[in-house]
Length: 221
Ligand code: DX5
Ligand code: ZN
Image (cartoon, rainbow, N blue to C red):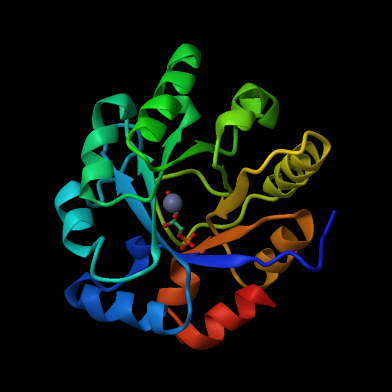
């Protein structure tokens, strides 16, 4: 249920930024008071696209003061936890579908052992029920509202019921994980996600392909 006192944050997804002026793009969103910077890593195997990885994260992680919200859409995430942590990830979010059930807790522990926050992402086709067992140890749950792999896709409506369920479960069980939604977020879908109980709105195209200031204001309502 919507809690009007709760603050909602925006996390611009760098995937949609102009990489020929990456530093300026980062500075522009930081100067607008943005708290999280969303960093989409794609390996061309878990998803049918290749974006950027550890050297790019390393080069930009400490050029700003936003929280480096790193979303790894990769196979074998366990192998790369330390590398992403060392490169500057503050939150490292891996995909439930990229590992076996018994690896999920192991990877969460590995991330926490690096001293950073652990996030788990679920694709549109994955039920919230599947990840209930992990919620008590997670810092963030990422609801993918598009199929991972590309920016600029349409918002998938069933994401709203997932956010609502996660928000209710969190309240009923007095848990602290943040709920993040990612994909197809614009003025309209952001409002629906805020009303469903989301904490962080990831947006790529809507921010980087429009006036950043008005886009961010529109997302926060
Ligand atoms: C997709 C990425 C998203 C994407 C969001 O796999 O995880 O973060 O970049 O882009 P928009 O906001 O344009 O849908
Ligand atoms: Zn993402």
